[in-house]
Length: 396
Image 1: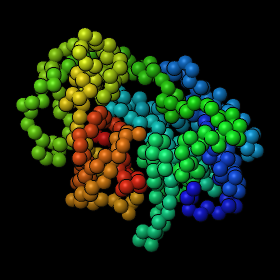
Image 2: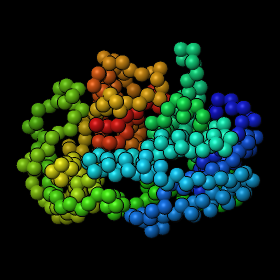
Image 3: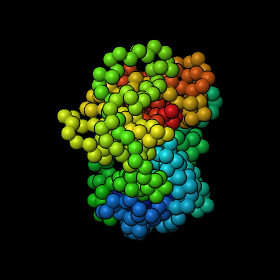
Image 4: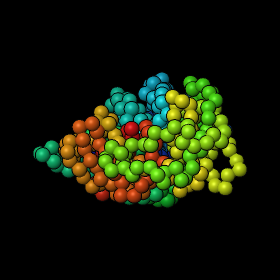
């Protein structure tokens, strides 16, 4: 574990979630001699739209407290549900309303875990915070200043650096990731050998701190049902289109119109769908599955294409507005007119893709070596130099 030679005497506050990862993270730090305390966050307790069988927060807290008792470390808890709703959930509702697809887990890390949680950790006397993320942190010197690097975890199946793509240098400076150099099977093995209550507990799924949800039902808390048309765009539609020849053309979406296809059904609201979605269209009689290829919330229309290889599912590039660009490594910031070959991903678990970043006054154009499937407005694109995450931005 490379944690930049943290002095042993420092107090570390571990975000104990009730899962196996944070449990083992706390154990590893205590084993190495650090002064470790646990802090549990209650961020959500509304069960609207939450699927049955998903553990509510009180179960999580019970498991977290059992682990703290087993490890003989002090246990604290805090209710941040009001702040979580304001900073994460309300943002999510607004993005879906506008036809974009947000990533609440990325926002949760930036706004809650490494901001409000870290503030509470300092109040408890903590010098640093630790989480169960599968990623690594290292130090380097650039321009005479200490720079903190965020690297992918050694477990490529669990690398979670993407979820931290919006945190800052300051936030990273006070963070520790004990699981960065070990794999998930090793974590399970350690937990089993210690007989921790979380050893065989399933990993959480769905929205951070909310759980796995029926998304339309969850969104109906604020977004109303509104009948609209489902239009199918035929595969041959693209054959006669002008091929893009500029960065602007390559990275923008095609502006579909209702007459570009045929009406094949209705839906309950365009804001309940995301690009690339297959389930929930409720339209049968097709030789291949239908996928959402575009969303128009102004006209309340969803555009679909048949088959997973439909041209409308793929884009060669994307655009990030200048005010939505975030550099984790400020010393690597690109200036207008510059371009750089890097690796990028548009979702968690997606293998890194070869891409060229073009920086302009209005923002960044990212052109991929291979067309990407399911590029969705509102999602985060993160770019890497090898294993190191350099920056990220919201897809426009």
